[in-house]
Length: 198
Image (cartoon, rainbow, N blue to C red):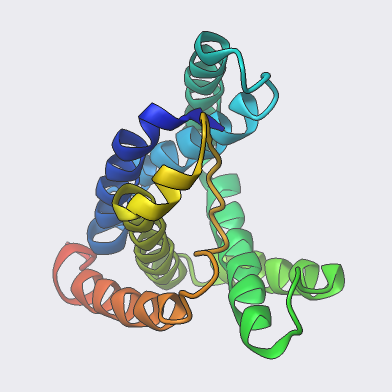
């Protein structure tokens, strides 16, 4: 959670980090791991502080973000497996939003897809890193863009902004389609330009 006034800067940072990941994720993989580690650590740490404590939330977000970034940057191979697992979980959530009757997908589906993604990431590192960073970055850009540009959400919320990284929100059925398109473009750019072997 972040104070409402930090929603726009956080959304802009998500868009920038997502663009780096989407279009240059393989070449900048350690940096991308750091960015995603920071975002994940900040989300987890700031959610443990009371919403009324703005300074505490900011300090917790920064401290949690730094710990998360360092943890993923130093755990390179674990990070690769986690990226694959995260991509599998993301596919489970997005896929369930189309075939399920609302809510979260069954835990067994998330676990199985995360396991498949993790094993695949270790076996086909280069290609899985390219695809995972392209699609992960594309989704991050979409979520960040929605957070930064949605004035109706900002007007309706009081003090605290909560990031829902796996859900674009109601009435946005176009978001998964845009995610696939942007992810495919990012994959192509990385395979042809930024992710080529030297």
